[in-house]
Length: 340
Ligand SMILES: O=C[C@H](O)COP(=O)(O)O
Image (cartoon, rainbow, N blue to C red; front, side, top):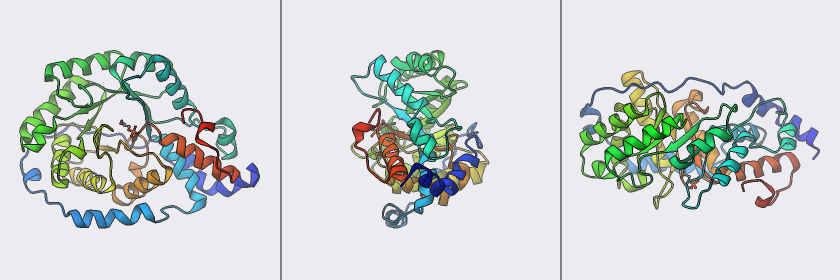
């Protein structure tokens, strides 16, 4: 198939990207005073959650000619992440270069998007590399997200975690991904969890706060739902599943519980909270299943980077590979794509 044929084939789908609002509503959540009722009253039906989500992964969620547009949108929602012990300034700079130009120019042109500025949603790094990333991304409008609370365990003293948040904001991070003390959730000490997250929110100042629940550590979906409520009541701008370091990271059933909590919280308070699944999401097919669930449960407003992000280190490579296939009809090897 020629690039021109592929381009007309995807035109209809890509109009969604071209005309869709990339800058839709922002999260706006000042939080509310601690309330025990939404936590104590929360019930979760595990079997129903699994039934609701099991079909998504298998079914063709989007028809072929819309897939390219959905995949480009998924790409725009990625927090392109490197969180390894062997991270270096050089690796972070390469990651930032990729975030600014996530699609090869020929591929972007073949998709009819040559005149669009397509970037990832953010770059996510350890505090040590915030200044490097801010410098590398200068002028791009791409925010830097920092994991700044003794990531990934989050067990350093609260004062140290708050200081780390303030230091990341001072270095230019516009988003802070905080990690909760899982012990508070596991022991039902919801008030302590609320106070801790509230203190982090204050330390974030103008930066958006994404609260990582460490859902794989929380033992039950009910705890996931309750921790989601506490995080939102305490003022989180986003709630996020995982650090990527737990043995189980983002899953669709966990997503269902968290996004329904977002929906119910908005109904109760009018406040809008974003969602970030993270960890282990590495294929375009996975990404499509998440987008389908978000669309069905929260609606189109959440299908844009202001309210939805994938925390992922390798998802971009597969998305680019699938888009390449869409355009050329052939699969390139992973090594063909930069940062693969
Ligand atoms: O928040 C992002 C995660 O740490 C990335 O996890 P991943 O490497 O499994 O994609």
